[in-house]
Image (cartoon, one colour):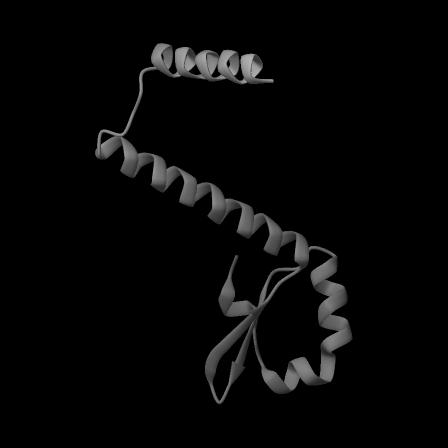
Length: 95
């Protein structure tokens, strides 16, 4: 993605909103909107936004996992499976 070719002033957005939305819907690149010469917003299609949010969620999960490993908050696979089986048996007996 080359942001240098996708920078437009807010006046362009105001004058061409329908065209911009249509172009984004066709898989266009995100558009950086400037105001008084400074970048103020990024406009992108909803599918790209959703992918970005999903990617961020996965990265947060990975970071949390790495932190837990560094803190020694890990359980061996065999022990984890045994715990799950024990909980399952206990809940079946309670039901």
